[in-house]
Amino acid sequence: MKIIIAGGTGYLGKLLIEYYRKDEENQIYVLTRSHILNKGNVHYLYWDGATIGYWVSFLENSDVLINLSGKSVNCRYTTSNKRDIYDSRLLSTDLLCRTVKHLDCPPKVFIQSSSATIYKHSEKKFMTELDGDIGIDFSMDVCKKWEQVFNSHHLPKTKKIITRTSIVLGNKGGAFPLMKKLVKAGLGGIQGKGTQYVSWISEGDYVKAIDFLLDKEEGVYNLCVPNPIPNNTFQKILRKKLNVLFGLNLPKILLKIGASIIGTETELLLKSRKVYPERLLNMGYNFETTTFNKLKI
Image 1 (tube, helix red, strand yellow):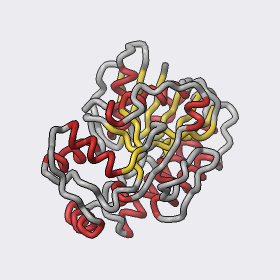
Image 2 (image 1 turned 90 degrees about the horizontal axis):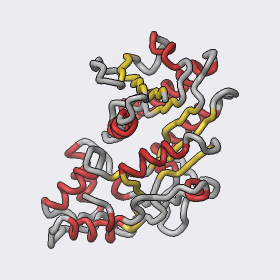
Image 3 (image 1 turned 90 degrees about the vertical axis):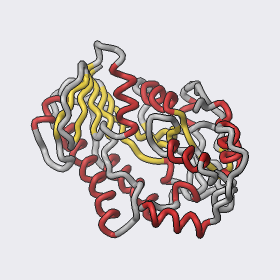
């Protein structure tokens, strides 16, 4: 396949590159703000995420376009950072959609990244694609507007898919290495009330779910395991996996102080994400890892 990955130098992009580069017949083109040398069947194309450039011609006759572009939300939600988070997502998505419209042979499939954080805090109701409650705070609004931009463009020759991805857990990046460091430092107790749910997906299931969706019907898909677990259970299992006997509980106030010190927000830990991958399961996807106690660390 000819695969285009916009914003592909981040954690999720690297997972996809590693997965698809194994087949040497695949040609992978990564749109990035960094200047990186090509490596085998992986080609890096410079773009700024806001303006047309030479990269446009590489989208012609491609099989799949995956858009992962966006400033990391692992930061303080200052006015400046909020503006950058919005702009880096909305402008790049609009640019790609407008570009695809004018191609002679556009990508067969366009996978647009979104996030499971689009749903409201929930400790009881499962949030499905058809019955999930979408909220109005900052992070939810970012995802909502992100999807609205994507959906505002009619691409008659391209199948459009939105992936609402939960926390991806693995050792190659993302939040999991930091979670393990906290546990090893003795800070692996209950975070906040501990009743908030953690929705997640393994690195292996993330890339395989993306690949699985390439020939499925368009629409929105939750990428998460069907078995989210409460934070207190998650922390207990993680301590056991790491052979750590004790974990200091961290109430909300301490988490807020810690987040301020390291320059991030507490939402990742305190918001309850009880998300269910209804459409993915209905399409016949079989998860490799469905429960946290079976996740290899």
